[in-house]
Length: 167
Image 1: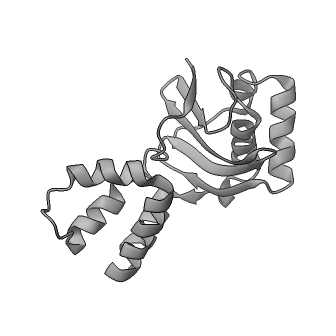
Image 2 (image 1 turned 135 degrees about the vertical axis):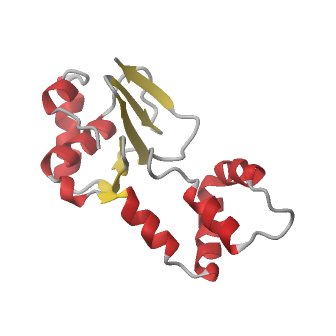
């Protein structure tokens, strides 16, 4: 995992957002944190609901995505995820561990999981299914391929987020 330096990250946030992020982490508002090979992601409960956050590092470039209404600057939700990483990196599930859990599912369990994902991420599943080479019947290997393609190694599969990029 490419590391995120606290001093470097601090410079990207206003004092208010940075402090709010720490408070969000300390009060348990960061849920289901995951560490990918170049990313961190989690759901953060905020005043306006739950927000999905993804922070990616590519060399010196850092991209932060959040589903909140903040536009053009890093938000307190992204700060909360970073505070979690700095204070308790062991609480982040490694993407490889998540993939192992997925591979251990029975076909029925995997289909149920895909059904739940369809409710929340239908557009993503539709895009992945278009890539699937099977005709009308999704095979066990095809299902595993579909779930694996959710991109846990690289961050979340969420799309249409407001982006902030620092380089």
